[in-house]
Length: 350
Length: 112
Image 1 (cartoon, rainbow over the protein chains, first blue to last red):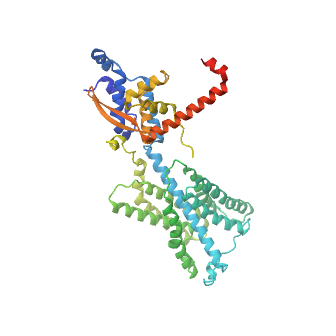
Image 2: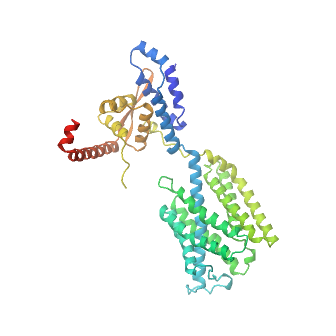
Image 3: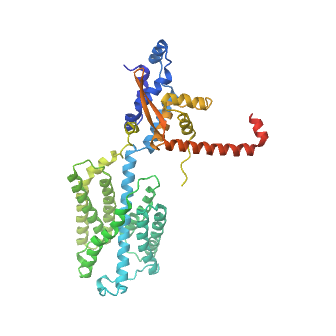
């Protein structure tokens, strides 16, 4: 039967995470009792009944618990959110990089830089960007997102942050100049929403990438850029080339539809696997849906004169909401997802 | 990239295991003796250090022995642990030599 001393110490050990207690508790209790007992039966009986762990001893357990909860593998909530934010940033940067790749292809095609390609149809000839900056700045911005994405995927986090931060400056300048000179049509919400949600937010969230954070595998992400281009941008370009641009959603609508499709695909995959999902990808999709939804809502301001486009925008929002509902329960579980605790060194050695 | 500096507690724990495997309380006693009672490890602190050193592959469980109805688990140095301890001891010895040289005879006498 356990002594009063042992029970009091075990109570203090409850401060520690479960996985840690499972691996170390018995050992700690044995060492703690060893530190008290003298080998004299009478004295030990008295100690077992009357003594308890000192405040310094409890403080050492509390300090260990704090370290394990804050930095150990049992930091579940922070872990899931950190992972989801990093994946969402990679996804938004991928979207920006795909836009950059599109600019590159359209520009090179419309300037006849590939002699083996037929001349670009007038509907997709890249217009020279306007605004306060020379066109070269806009081309640089578009290509900078490609570099930012590649460096982020390859884990050169600081380089990616600097490039992305520089890439969003010309857009901000254009917004400010446009608003103060009246060149930008009121109510300005669409362009500002784009800058805040797709430029500023990912750049700020890039601080979630740090040396100690688990890194995403670069291979699949690097492949995602050409895949995204061929699966999304090329079909859109084809529709545009046939002169049917009116059927295409605007960028905000496309963002909503793509996130909705990703939610449906992820929900279907998770259900077919019959194994518990970590929920991190679902949480990532919820974050992306929030970004896409907010952008859709604020960019409706651009269509105040066109009730039909407002209806289309609302339908896109509805589709997005329905799709998010499929992954939301799994995303809620991600709050308690934990990375696997480290293997028990004692069983490994056995 | 430079490896993480070893803490004083980790250095003492590794030193305590350098000659033979020891169990938790055995390590506490040995560390106290090695440090002239200046380092008195609490059990919570000791197991924080043991967990870190195990995760870094510097120590590993050796065996378990039952005594007074309790299981005592012994730990031993791994080959990496032995190497890390030797490097740290060398670094500390080199630092001590520099300190002595800078203090000069007067400083050494004052300390004595």
